[in-house]
Amino acid sequence: MPTDRSSAGDPARTLALLWREPPEGPRRGPARALDLDAVVSAAVGLADRDGPDAVTMRAVAQALGVAPMTLYTYVPGRAELLDLMLDAVHAQTARRDTAGRPWRERLTAVAEENRALFTAHPWAAAVSTLRPPLGPGSTAKYEHELAALDDTGLDDVERDDCLTHLLSFVQANARAVAEAQAARRQSGLDDAQWWAAAGPLLARVLDPARYPRAVRVGAAAGAAHGSAHDPDHAYRFGLARVLDGLAALIDARR
Amino acid sequence: MPTDRSSAGDPARTLALLWREPPEGPRRGPARALDLDAVVSAAVGLADRDGPDAVTMRAVAQALGVAPMTLYTYVPGRAELLDLMLDAVHAQTARRDTAGRPWRERLTAVAEENRALFTAHPWAAAVSTLRPPLGPGSTAKYEHELAALDDTGLDDVERDDCLTHLLSFVQANARAVAEAQAARRQSGLDDAQWWAAAGPLLARVLDPARYPRAVRVGAAAGAAHGSAHDPDHAYRFGLARVLDGLAALIDARR
DNA sequence: TCGAACTCCGTACACTGTACGCGGTTTTTA
DNA sequence: TAAAAACCGCGTACAGTGTACGGAGTTCGA
Image (cartoon, rainbow over all chains, first blue to last red; front, top):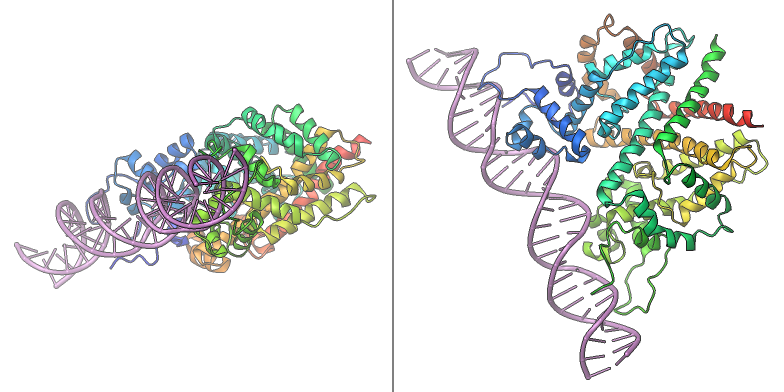
C-alpha cells in the first residue's frame, strides 16, 4: 500500500511539488519519462494559446505524447496543476528595479508588471489568488512587490493591505479582459455584431423617461470608448484612482 | 420549421427573455406548466444554498419536478439562465434613497448595497458583469447607482468610470469571499487545518534571509487578522482607499 | 378537418476529471 | 540469488456535465 493518504487537497503534498522537494527515501521503478516542469510548461502553453478551458488533462497529456492517466503520477490532479502553472508564471515575471524612485512610480511599475503578466497569460487572472500557491515564484514576486513599499512609513500590515488592494485592482481588470475574450470566443460575435442584433430591442425597451441617467450615461460611455466597456481605459482610470487613494494614506504617514 | 435560428448566443432572444417580451403571434400547443420566473427563482434558490456549481440543468429541473430537457423550452441554455438569475437579483436589491447627502455617503451606500447583494447571493460575484445582462433589474440598478453621482461636477463618461471602478472593487472583494468558501467546501479543510498541514514545510522552505520582507509582512498580516487573508478587513480598507481616490477627482471638479 | 406550432421529454453524444487495477521495471531486502 | 516492495505508464470504466435530435401528445388557425 502506498503512503499516499487522500492525496487530493493535501496542502503538504502541493507545497512539496511547488518547491520541487522530491519525496524522501530512495526511488524505485523505471525512470520517469517526463518531469514536472515539462508537464507544467505544456499546460501553460496550452492555456496561453487556447484559454484556461483548454487545459484538460487529456489535452495536456496529448501535448506531451503520453496517456492521460500518466499525468497523475506527476500531479495529484487538475487543481494542483493550476497552482503549479500560476507559480511558474509568477517566477518568470519581469521585475524592474525601482529602488530610489518615488513610491508612486514604484507602485506603477508593480501594477504594470502584473498587467504584463495577465496580458501574456490571460488565464492567470481567472485562477484564484485568494490563498496564493505560496511556491517559490509567488514568494519571490511578493518579496519584490513589497520592496516597492519600502520607506513609505507604513507598518507591515498596511503594506500588505496596500499591495493586496493594488493587485486586486489589476487582477479584476484582467478578468474583465479575459471574460470579454471568452465571450467573443464562444458567441462568435464581436461587439459591433452584438449591438447590431441587440440594438433595436434595446432602443424600444430602454425608456429614457424611466431610466434617464442610465440611457444618457450609457450612450455617452459607449460613444467615448468604441464599445460598451473599454478595459484599457478602465485600467488607466482605475490605476490613477487607486494610487490617489493610497496617496491619502501614505502621504499622511510622513 | 420553427423561426428559431441558432438560438444559443442570440442577443435579441436573451434580451426578449430578460424583458419578458412574449414572442409575437398567437400561441398554440398545451398551456405551459411553469413560467420563466419559476425557472429563474428555482435556479437562484439552488445557487444561494449550494453555490454556483449546483446550478446544473438537471438539478434545476428536479427542483421544479420536470425533466431536464423541459427547461430548454423556457431558456435557450445555461448561460442565458445565469444572465436571467443575475438580472433577477439585481431587481431585488435594496436601494436606499440618499438624495441630499454628501457624495461620499451616497457612494458608501451604493457599495454597501452591492456588498449585501453578494452576501445574499455569493454566486453572483462569479458570473461575468463585463457585458451586464441589460435587463430591467440591472438597468434599474444602474439608474439608481448613477443617481449617487448627481451633483458631483463629473461629466457622463467620468460618472460611468467612477461607478465601474467602485463596483469592480466590491465585486473583486466578493469573489475573494466566494473563492474562500468554495475552497473550504471542496477541500474540507478550514484555515487552521490548512496551516497545521502546511506549516512545517513552509517554515523550512521560507527562508527569512532570502525573502525578508515576505516572511515578516506575511507573518504580521496573518497575525493581525486571524487568517492568511481577511476579506472583511480588505473590504473596509479598500473602500476607504477607493473613496479617497475618487475624492481626488471629485473634489477637484468643484 | 387538417396541418402547423407548440408542449414535455427519453435517448444519445461528446466531453470532463479521475478511481481502480494490471503488467512491467527497478531497487531493496532476506 | 530470489523474493518482495515500490514505482511507472496507462487501459478501462464511471459518474457527471450541457444539449442536439426527434417523437408523442395538445391546441389553435385556416
